[in-house]
Length: 140
Image (tube, rainbow, N blue to C red; front, side):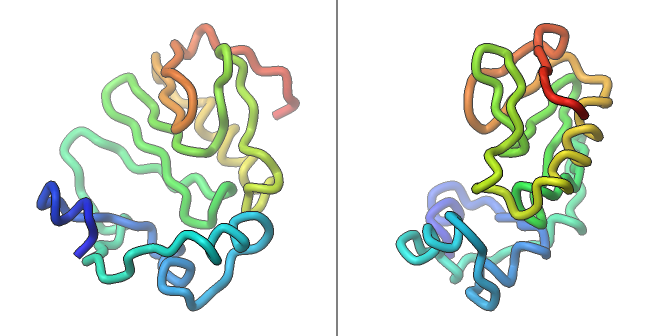
């Protein structure tokens, strides 16, 4: 059982495309592969496939690129974008190439998420930003 499950008694969901990496059956490339040597995942957790999950009021979007199974979540007018991109000073910057599984696929996922009718974007890093205030200087 993972620390999160022990502390909160909650289920832990993971996209099935991430399972081979979590269980050490596949090795990540680049910086992430190096990080995996030092940071170990608690594989004793009871993991549930994210693809089969049903959440009340939450939409799960498969947005590969940062990782094969990266997901974003929509709740009401909020997009929780994870590591798909960063938003320093409301300026959209895709996740760094050296941290991505596939940057071309990431850009497709980025186009998909930016077309969503949401009012707020909440990235994993940096503060939430109103969608109307985000500046984008990259070609999508």
